[in-house]
Image 1 (cartoon, rainbow, N blue to C red):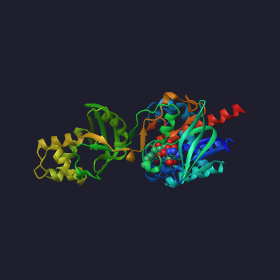
Image 2 (cartoon, rainbow, N blue to C red; image 1 turned 90 degrees about the vertical axis):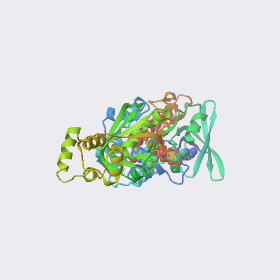
Image 3 (tube, helix red, strand yellow; image 1 turned 135 degrees about the horizontal axis):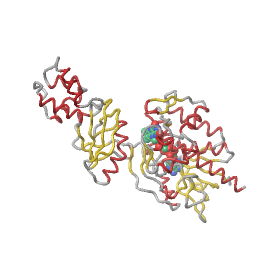
Image 4 (spheres, rainbow, N blue to C red; image 1 turned 30 degrees about the vertical axis):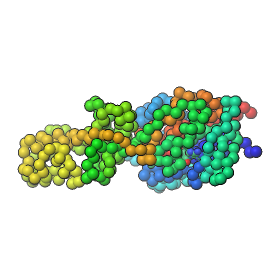
Amino acid sequence: MQIYDLIIVGAGAAGLLGAGTAAEKGLKVLLIEKMEKPARKIRISGKGRCNITNTKQHDDFLAHVYSNSRFLNPALRNFSNFQTIEFFNSLGLQTVIERGERVFPESGKAWDVAECLVKWAKKSGVEIFCNAKVKSLNIENCRITGVNTNFGNSEKTIEAKYFLIATGGISYPLTGSTGDGYNFAKQAGHTVTDLHPSLVPLKIKNHNIQLNRLQLKNISLSLYVDGKYVDDEFGEAEFNRTGITGALALRLSRKAVSAIIAKKHVEIRLDLKPALNCEQLKNRIAREMQTVTTNYALLCKMLPLQIVNIFAEKANIKLQNRITDADIEKIIASLKNITFEICGFNGFDEAIVTAGGVSLNEIDSKTMRSKILENLYFAGEIINLDANTGGYNLQIAFSTARLATQSIAKQLKKSF
Ligand SMILES: Cc1cc2nc3c(=O)[nH]c(=O)nc-3n(C[C@H](O)[C@H](O)[C@H](O)COP(=O)(O)OP(=O)(O)OC[C@H]3O[C@@H](n4cnc5c(N)ncnc54)[C@H](O)[C@@H]3O)c2cc1C
């Protein structure tokens, strides 16, 4: 029977990059993927454009990583965001840097990133089995000996010297990430921390459906937990049928979700004019009042039409009335703060990433090796690491996978 040097379970971002790295080092690598094609999640990432990484400097980059960014330090030093860009460029995939230091393929197609990785992995000698689902691990004398794998109706045990679990999290399960790897980790004796959706839309209590699809630009959102300021973000937000989404809300969602789970009172405060202070707003309103007389006409000048009625309701002003000094005070106060009570969050099927995973205490951050089984390694979203939107999550997958398979290659060399 064929014995591989390395079996990688999961042909996502981590699995593909790890597999190609190991194969380039001369290892005989098998990559097992349960879907019909590798990298389904990459193909839909970044709204179909794939935000590959981010060009923030090391410490700034780590500031966007949870649950313990120090854990990522060795992996990111070993294969940095800048090396990721060079890597893709060397494969002929040109990249562009956009607002927020986010890196995208120049073609604007996530599909190209996925294909580029698959082509490179195959060219490097990686064997890829698709439509093959790993069911469980074979463990003997503190080592994994093989993976029990379903191929349609038949089941086979495939053996190897080393194993890397790169099965991702449990979010967007239609892409194949259904959390199987957590069971493998538990089978190996690992602790899996509580899992919850992150980068996920937030639900607003008594949400006004008229807000559905409203997009707001150049606004700021602040997160308050039990009345205390926690964080704020500036940029774009979008409302949906149940609450608030868009880049800002998603970024605030990790802390909001934790607070909701802890049964705390969570609010999002919307500042519609973050660039103007109250005095500047007063001057702006005075200028507008040279041509308008009613609250309605004034608000139409200052806000998107879709929000005018709701704004008036929240500000407690009568739209058809002539503008009074008291109205101006209320308008200014509401422009700077409309409060939404957050009562929940959407599920894993709408979460960009899973927070939680295989406990960091049980993985060696310098090698990605399990501290429990000596020939087991982890990479990517399965680990209890996640990050903001902005290309950080894919970089976590790339850096941890590169480090894991380089470490495996070193181990193999030692044993010759
Ligand atoms: C809609 C969306 C958009 C995103 N956009 C971005 C973005 O632009 N930039 C960014 O940085 N991050 C983005 N992310 C997050 C990022 O895509 C993930 O964090 C990253 O893909 C994780 O990589 P991974 O290899 O660990 O897991 P995955 O990419 O999830 O890959 C895991 C693979 O393992 C396979 N698998 C699972 N179980 C088994 C099994 N039992 N047997 C065999 N195979 C198995 C799965 O089918 C899957 O192919 C996005 C996520 C989503 C959902």
